[in-house]
Length: 156
Image 1 (tube, helix red, strand yellow):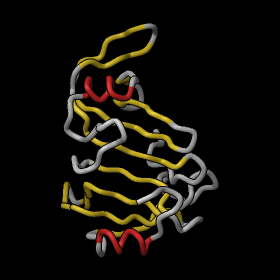
Image 2 (cartoon, helix red, strand yellow; image 1 turned 135 degrees about the vertical axis):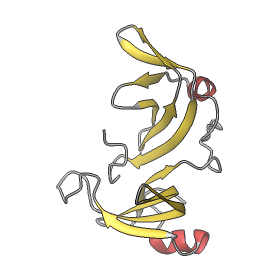
Image 3 (tube, rainbow, N blue to C red; image 1 turned 60 degrees about the vertical axis):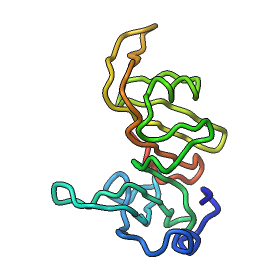
Image 4 (cartoon, rainbow, N blue to C red; image 1 turned 90 degrees about the horizontal axis):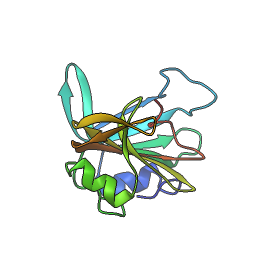
C-alpha cells in the first residue's frame, strides 16, 4: 500500500473486505483543516464497547486515496526495521531520534512527504536540555500521515 496512491479497491484487493469500516473526522466534526475519512480496519475486536482494529487504513474523502495509516500489529516494519513490540530504545537508536513525552510518548520521524509517529509505552521520563525524554519501554503503535492530504491521525 502506498500513501497518496492506493485506492479503496487496492486495499480490498490486497487485504480483502474490511472487518470494520466507518467514516469520520479526527476532530469529530467536519472541518476545513483535516478532511473526512473512510476507515478500513483489519484484525479488529471489541474493547469497552468500541471496535478497535490493529491495522487501520484511512482514505481521504477529498482525494479518495490512502492518506494515513495506523497499526498496533508487529507485522509492519518501517525502513529501519522498527516494529510494534520492539524495545523503544532500539527504535530510537535505529531512527536516530529521541523518545519524548509531550502530548504523548513517541519517537517522531518525518520525511519531506510524511509525518511518522512511533508511539511508545512504559519507560521513565527524565528532563534533558529542556525536553522530557523517555528511557525504556516498548513500541506500542505506529502512525503515518501524508503531509499534504493526511487525515490527521497524528493530531494531538
